[in-house]
Image (tube, rainbow, N blue to C red):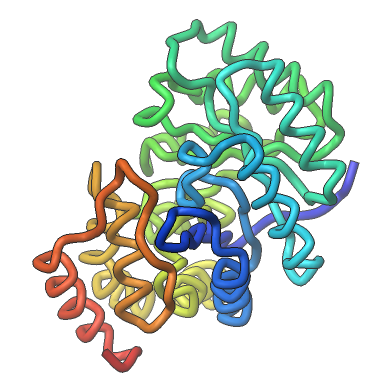
Length: 299
């Protein structure tokens, strides 16, 4: 298995669509280049912000193929291997490994509630089948299933390649996992509204969509807390970022808001694929004001 430490800001880049909703490969590559140049520590291709759930299997394969090839080892690359069944999750995981992914991010089985034991057996089966680092993605809101701290700690005890988790429930869970696993499980913040708190609690980084908008500032926040220990400066920056973070975590509109903010900053990433609707003019105007308040970009 690849021995590689994952830490810092991992951006889940948006997928750019043409007017006919087909994938725009060149603009997607240009966007990936922008966030890598800004200093993110890693890339996750095929996550929620990539709109994997709206893509066909062929489109998902296409996105992973050109995405992994384009990143070309510049930063660690995690591939989304999302599927509701264990069988299909293993298939996607092996596909991503064969393409050269450095690790896998796997959301809880979705569209159907399962028991805690079933969740444990699901991730254990994937870990046994694929020799790559695996990051379980505890997105309860989207999957309907909760990968509790108890299950996560059990996976840390009984697998060699599950040493990370993307935790979306919040800061309370972050501390439960770190304490309960006795340091064996490394937590990535999964909620847009708690990176500052998460880093203070010991999170190794963040995997998010907001870093599509201002990757430089997302990296700066991480460095201020984790590397420089300048908590006062980090808190000041975080409160400037918070209003946009909340818009990027709003049910129903978060994806449209991320893409709209990128457009405002001159990064042409287009609209989300339907049924998600584009951001309203009212929201975009509000966002322009928030971005101006950052005093970092020219709006």
